[in-house]
Amino acid sequence: MNDKNDNKQILLNQTHFSKIEDFDCLECDEPAYFVLQDKYHSFSLSLSTLLNCLKFAENEGVIPAIGEEWWLKVSNMNK
Image (cartoon, rainbow, N blue to C red; front, side):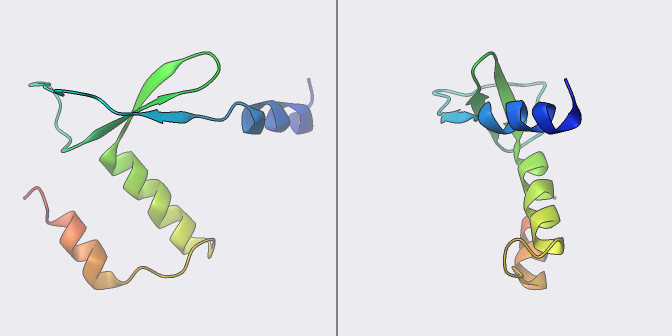
């Protein structure tokens, strides 16, 4: 498969969000995890990973600037 077909397959394999009831993980160091499912797998996405994706989109100009004050509040949430 070439890169164009690989990218198409990736984009067609959309994820869906699921809510975790009674999330309790003593080994987890994140304040929140999101359970996602594509056509083949269920997997978790940490809040920090989601925020990194959001920051990437902001830096790339895909979304409007969020603002430094908001980012500071988020970065200090778990300190």
